[in-house]
Length: 229
Image (cartoon, rainbow, N blue to C red; front, side, top):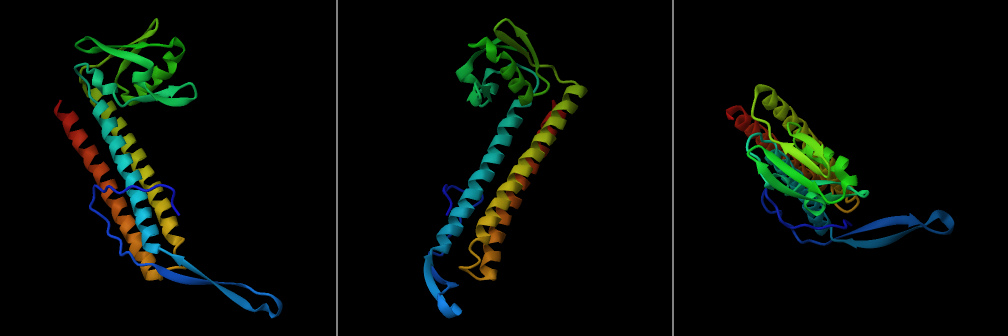
């Protein structure tokens, strides 16, 4: 059984048939090798639905994360809200930047990130640079000065390259989620027919195709936006 359940779907709702099916499993008996039959009742439709929901939850997360990454890939005017969703490594775990520093606008193209604990400067600097490789991040005491560069051909090419790299990371995550879902469905092969297993796997493949197509659409849209800046 899966340990996590989610119900929302951006690609349409999934319908469960609600049927409970029984199946039998043979185990070795005593003398003479007689076999005993142990009956099990498995709500295979509930398991299949939970599997799809779990797959959908994680694929939606990959798409949502990619959207956040793309939103930070923009040159030009400084905007403190760009760091609202940024998480960085701190004290051996991940924490939001808002817990570790104060962000303020100090110029048209510059932000100041005042870090509460100077020992975290290096980790926070790395997190900001990973968010957008075109940012120019310079330490100044306990503060990081973050400059938003004006758009140039070099900046544009760098951002497009980063967007493509993050898109491939998102696709790889979606494919791993797909494989996990397929493996869960395979566990039902003793409870349902091969045809039913194929039907459930096809549903997971459809979610995969839709999610990857959305990543591709977002990347194409970002490339178009950057070309017009």
